[in-house]
Amino acid sequence: MSALSYTAEALAEGDGRNGRVRTEDGLVELALGIPSELGGAGGEVSNPEMLFAAGYAGCFLSALGSVARVRKVKVPDATVRALVTIAGGAEGFGLAVELRATLPGIEREVGEDLLAAAHAKCPYSKAVAGNIPVTLTLA
Image (cartoon, rainbow, N blue to C red; front, side):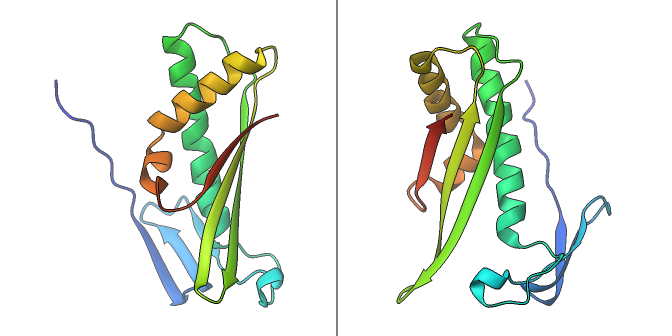
C-alpha cells in the first residue's frame, strides 16, 4: 500500500498579522488584521486564529466521523465548533482551544468516548498535543 500525502501551500505577505495570505491555488485569499480585542483596528479582516479554528473544526469533524463509522455509530448531524483563544501575558502570547461537538441523538457516554477517540486520531490534535490546552465539550 502506498502512503498518502498532501501538502498545502500558502503565502503570507505584508506586515504579518496586518497583511494578506493566499493559497497557491488561489482558493483562499484573505486580508489579515489584528482583532480590536488585541489592540488592532479589527474590521472585515481575518486572522491566523480564525484560520486555525476553521481548519481544526473541519479536521476534527472528519476524525469524529471516521471513528464513528468504525464503531458503527451514526452521527449524521454532528457539528464541531472550534474556539481558538489567543491571550498574552508576561511570558508572551499563547493559544488555547475548545472543541464543542454537537451529536444529536447520541448518549452522553458514547459521545464523550467518540470525542476522545477523535482527539486521538485528528492530525491537528496530534500536532498541538502537549503544546496548548485543548478542551473537548459535548454540547
